[in-house]
Image (cartoon, rainbow, N blue to C red; front, side, top):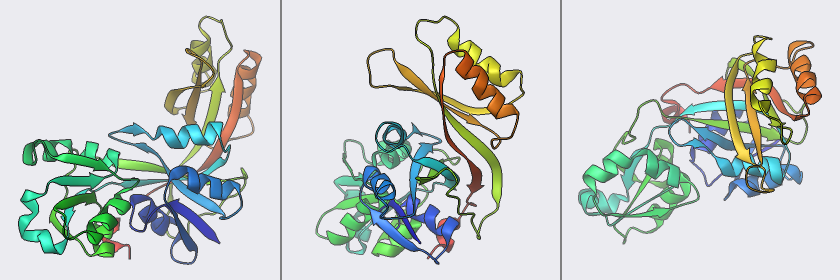
Length: 293
């Protein structure tokens, strides 16, 4: 079995893959999220693991929009991983790390470490990489440059970098949510290494046009059934200003009565409803990056 992830090796997505699937699979790295999703849709790999939301930076809009507008795959599992960001340099620059002229990492990682960077390196140049792993790889290949990477401990070990400042993230409760996607709604692969923390269902809902109070009616369909919504988020339909769809997360799997009843009520109101997934959610324990090899 093949599982794709946002590469190269030692990204946070790679850590999520190792924690969930273990070593009994073929792990395939892709340089971008769309390439990863396209590979699943095209049958090159069986599953893909892609980031969907960060506790500090919010939703990964590229993932959500690509799954909605380009490759309509299903979410068949969720992994929540703690994010621990470290400041690392090539060993040749260990003693000169305070003199670095550039910091290289994913835009979310740099944003998550704003306080440290602002207080330590005022005026420094930030360069954005496609992933934290790609940034670490670049630093490992350019010892002649006074450049640092922000990445996880696994990346430092993988690419032989020196962590000179650990845990530089602004907030300690920093987690990223990853979706396991597959072409079929029933394409499950239960983890043999992790225990499910909760059950979830994700819906995409579009509102009827020119109908006042439509969103209130949508929420009421869940409220009176006592269905707990853990997330509701709007995204543009890309068909014109003011046209949106809503992503709604429900804290239970699809049953025989409540969720089907809510969907039927929404459709009766003129809403468009699409089931994006009904699945188990898993949480990676703190410090897992130290254990992953």
